[in-house]
Length: 368
Image (cartoon, rainbow, N blue to C red; front, top):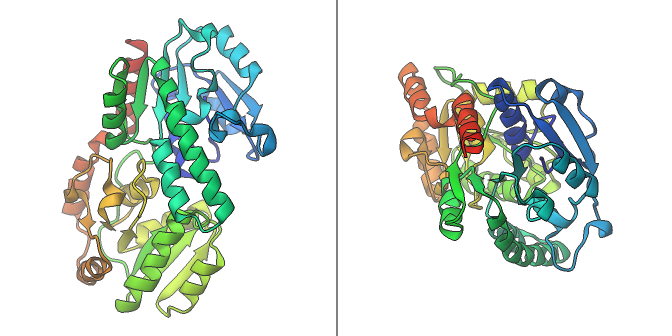
């Protein structure tokens, strides 16, 4: 079951769920998809991959609050969902901690239950709290982190925990030795590495620019890195706020592309010479890293961006400080991306093959 309607696949969590559904369907798995809907509507595109698609309203705002349960869990509770889960005798895959309200219910006691872990959620919310400027949101994120840390003790009711980050895999493997564990990287839209050999004349930073994590990364580049390079930077993503827009406007070598459509984004990724990908929040695996590696040329990232991916430094250039980024950009801008680079990247990304990973999940769940 999914925490959100996973189509359109236009943000990290939805991308992982949608392309997982697609890959499992291609592997011959009959899927009954249950998803919580809160603004994305019913999507007929999902029906071609599923036996049935069910939708449940998420209880947002005050109706979704609980004194003890995390909001991301309590706002996703539905008696009808439990009834339908009981009716279909099949293994259950809970997408994210968000969907686990019924995990320990006695009615599902004899069913094989697996959780797809997207983050160590209490760590993720603690990091959000530290970065949030709004006092009310800071308090909410901090409270949510505490509730999630307590709630996490319930996850041992699952027979299997499937993490998308190696770091998360090791954490849950240590915490729940009685469950079986599997590391499966995020699913994505790419069947193979489609990077173009040659050179471009700009660097690209992409992301949901309404998210504090991505705002922080974009402002780091705009204020501390690219004023020192003179090299073109394109910043592209959803809902850029005034702070990012203003920082772009005062930088003559920067171009802001707000809310690009899929075709524009694909072209920006393919034609950029360097993908600059800092992050200051270690959590999960960033889908922007996947799109850059499968569809772009040089990738320049900091250690936090590679955290938990299982990918070595061999696959991209790593920088930590602003000075490191400036030096690496100045060097890479003059280095064409070669066919040998493409071949090497394809070899290093074999563990991120959707078909192979769908088979891993299938064997793990149905072979247990």
